[in-house]
Amino acid sequence: MAGDLLVKRLGLVDYEPALEAMRLFTAERSDTTPDQIWLLEHPPVYTLGQAGLAEHLLPAGREAGIPLVQIDRGGQITYHGPGQLVAYLLLDLRRRGLKVRELVFLMEQALIDCLADYGLHAERKTGAPGVYIDGAKIAALGLRVRNGCSYHGLALNVDVDLAPFTWINPCGYEGLKTIRLRDFGIADDVAAAGERLLGHLLRLLPRVAVAGDGVASVAAAD
Image (cartoon, rainbow, N blue to C red):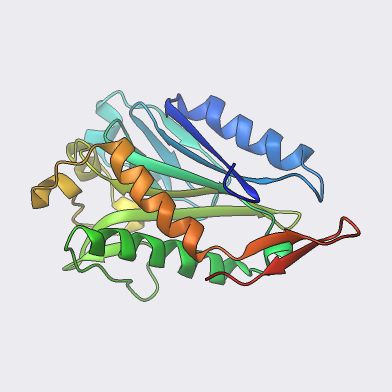
């Protein structure tokens, strides 16, 4: 536990069981269930958001034999694979006093601050959620909110094979270049990058304090 939040380091997990576990956790949680962050990797998989267009999976992607899973987050198509850090944020937004746009901004800021630790200048791009370095995408975001609680999250390219990104229009953008930490000579593996990113997420998230009558209230983050 990190105060009011449980962190799970799950290693390599198949995508569809992880998705079902997120849905189940969100459906069954109560007003007092501690929030969770899951840090993990997935075997190769393409995921297509609820409004995603199948044509963003290019012929080379269809021929690659990588599973395509239609899911319930926002956004278009993206790729997950070993060497990519995935962080799922299962948060009660009402309890933390967060709106969806504020959570997206917070996630992007945590990524930007994490990359700054490595000496990299990353930035947002208007109208295109995620984090970019010189116009190339290094991290993607996608969320679903149900009954005021979030699931799904973000993906940071650490040492992932970039070829499968060239077989799609990443996040629906034709020709969008994707990059990874390894391209900048950074030797940290997924686990090390995960701990660094986790520190920034925990620093930025508003805290949940339990009042004397057992009712949760929000305490400001440092």
